Length: 509
Image 1 (cartoon, helix red, strand yellow):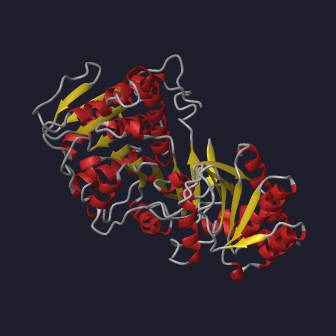
Image 2 (cartoon, rainbow, N blue to C red; image 1 turned 135 degrees about the horizontal axis):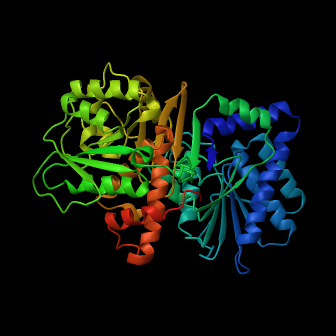
Image 3 (tube, helix red, strand yellow; image 1 turned 30 degrees about the horizontal axis):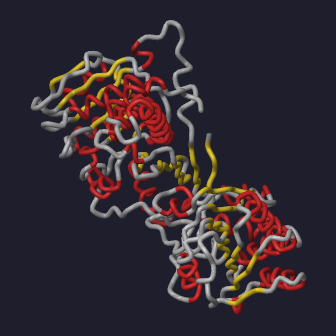
């Protein structure tokens, strides 16, 4: 299933245009948001907890004041601390007057927070989506740092932990991390992409009454941001009772430096257990090879070139090719890449470039054009930088623009293997990011990337678009790791344990 995310700009534009289109909707939306926070507090609060609300000067502070008013009216022990009230927004001013009219007075910050025990229920309503860059030194940051020193048992953030920009995930910028977050409309990138995501705690998303036509209008402009928890529903549903190995697909894995040929075997076995009908492995080094799985077939190639590849691909009816597992240097050159690009465009050959095949690859792609639905690059952050000297880390939404241009120019799709991986594609001119949060540190072991590459290879051979292959493969591998952990323990997994559980993973969640 796909769930759409909103960027900071999209969220603010949806809010602005909805308010322009409908009279008085701004206050209604604030009341609705504050009421959602109120309900969450009622659900989470323990009987002994006193409630401290930090209300910033903007509309996020206005949401906090609505929640404070409702809590006060309901008889909860609540104190509201107002931060930078001299910069108060008009909507927040209305909510402050409503609080004062019922006898809920606001304490000005700076005020002492040392009187609040760790059992405090703390509501962070200081910044929300109001930041595009990390919070600068000043009173707002001082208040958050002081609040963090309480080490409150429960911290509920409104929209985002204050100080964390919605479109940045390079690091956790929030001085006060949340145990829970209530956000509105849709999740934002910083809610889901590490390491920023770890600051939000458990997230609740409330739709609010934004205008549906406005939402469609804003999101149509892009970029498209999605989260997937799908494992590839129906990937093999086309198989009939007369299916055979070519129906399922023959795939080829090429790679393996001396002592690292096992990476090819892991990828090949993962492809077979995911559903391929035939897997061939061509190890580029004869040295230090481990025992070969008997259900794979093998080719002895010291190098790859069109003269070797062309008859093999044609005669063996290869549907997809994985190059790079276990290689330290790039085994490709311009001639071989030109041949592969032609097979990819003209015959629909699926291509995955992984590990060493990514090193220095970008300059070799100059002037070549691949089919983006059949071509996938699978770099981890270090390999992304090694692709080209001009590449920068992919840790902000604005920083993705050059990566999308790279995808467009070469006709490729990128699956970025960070701790919360995501796919970058550009199909039909539309920039698209699809992320998955299904991975965890059980997969943080050498060889798990080879398992992922082999799983992706099988899905590509089955006809799945490269724009979907990466996150479907990640979700399958994560599910297999969960199954294997029941047998071998959370920290005791090997990549082979995960491979052997791939066939147990149901396609539907």
